[in-house]
Image 1 (tube, rainbow, N blue to C red):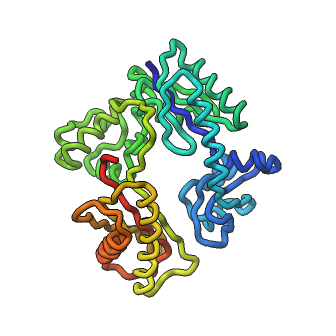
Image 2 (cartoon, rainbow, N blue to C red):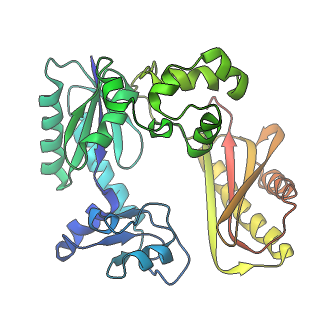
Image 3 (tube, rainbow, N blue to C red):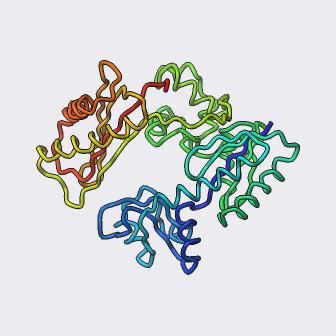
Length: 340
C-alpha cells in the first residue's frame, strides 16, 4: 500500500485565474475583501506574487508594499467550495480510500505497483475535470506523503520512503516537519536540536521531560518519518468552530471589546447549534496593534450549546487578558468534545 497526498497548487488564485484568464501569469493575491488599503490577510498568492515575498497569512497592506503591481481579489468562498467539491468527487471515482483534508488537499491510500503512474492519473483526471493543477506526494505513510508534496511543487510528483527519508530531510530545520511549529523549534534549539536528523537522534525520554509524555516522543517519531495514523474515508468531523473579525479602526475602549466578543460569541453559538454538538471549551483570540496575538480559554463545567453559556464563557476567557492595549482583531472559538 502507498499513501498519496494530493495538494492543489495555489488553489484560490488558480480558481480565480480560471474565472479570469487574463490574469494568467500575473501576480494575484486573494484575501479579505480584495482591498489592500483595508485590514485583512492574504489567503492565497499566485506563484508570481510569491516571488515578491507575498505569502498566506500576511497582512494585505504588507503584500501591497512587497508587490505593488499585484491584482488583489476578494475571497469568494462559494466558488472555491464548488471547485473543491468537483476535485474531491473526481478523486473518489478512483480505486482508493480518500481522506479529504480541506478545500485543497486529500490523502489517498492506493494498492498500486507503480504509485507514480497512479499519481499522474490523478493529475490528469483533476486537470480534465477542473482545469486545476495539483502536486502529488508519495510515501509509505501520511507524513512521508505530505512532506513529499513540498518537494514536488508545482504540479509535480515526488516520493519519500523510509529508505530515503533522512537523505531528503535530515539536513532540513526541525520545523520543516509537518506539525512542528516555530515555538517548538525554539525550544528544541535551546536543547541544541536544530535539524531533522538532530531530532531523530534525540532521546524520547529526555524530550518527554521537556514537552510532556505524549508530545516529546511524538516529536522524535515525526523526525524519523514514522506515522501510524490511517487514511480513512470517514466524513471529516471538525474539532471546533470559530469566527474572527478584523476591525478597520483599532478598538481602544475595552467596553467595546467586550461588546464585540459577545457579538462574535453569538455567531459562534449559531455554528455550534448547526453542528449539533455541544462545546466543551471556549477560546478568545485577541490581536493587538501592531500584530501581537494572544489567546485565553475557558473550559465549561459541562459541554453546552446554550448561546448564553457560550457568551458567558467567552467573556470569562476575555478576563484573562490583562493587557488592554488597542485591538485590531477579535476571535472566538468553540472547541467540541472529542466524540461527536
